[in-house]
Image (cartoon, rainbow, N blue to C red; front, top):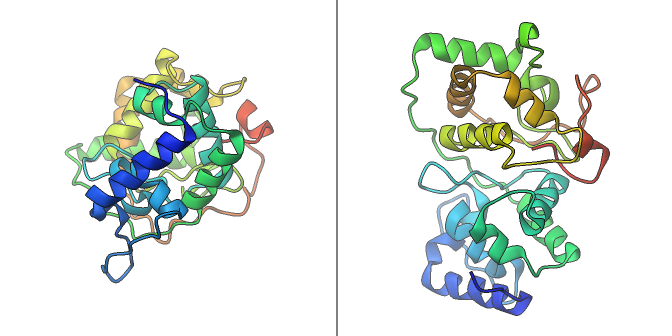
Length: 246
């Protein structure tokens, strides 16, 4: 992929806004919301072409919701894509020449967006698998030293400020693929990489179950909590820096 300058990125985003007007529609009443040409909303049309209007989630059941995620988490993921810690060539191509300050602006814009959540696709998982997923999400598995998702991502699973992402409104296939990336070392966070450690303690059936259960949960308002009621159950290097754990 050719290298993109900030000017090229902005031009690509603006071009997408002209040809993909649907990527700029997100008003709560269903009416189109078209952004001025030099606004962040218009510049980020290249992002919403995949992640949906205002980052509400892609229509294909894979690209995750980024709207309303904590700004520090989004910034860290943008940095990781740009710097090669996360591997996805389209993201790397868009971000490789952008400064830290501009990545913070992108992260801040999406963190401030709160479009309605999309309806979840119906899960084909069995009742037993969904129950296993609920147990892992809310209680964990002490026998494998797997903490509950809720212990880090908040009791409502909507994330925690300043840098832990919510898990609701995220498609099953995306959740599963990210566990696979942590297990295989294709996705990395600051050491100690707690999510990679957790993923490697889980079986494929565990991962499928928790992805199925999480993807079926109603998000409510979906806002991240201000803080956790207790310390994190294990050390996460990314939470000691300016970014998120996953």
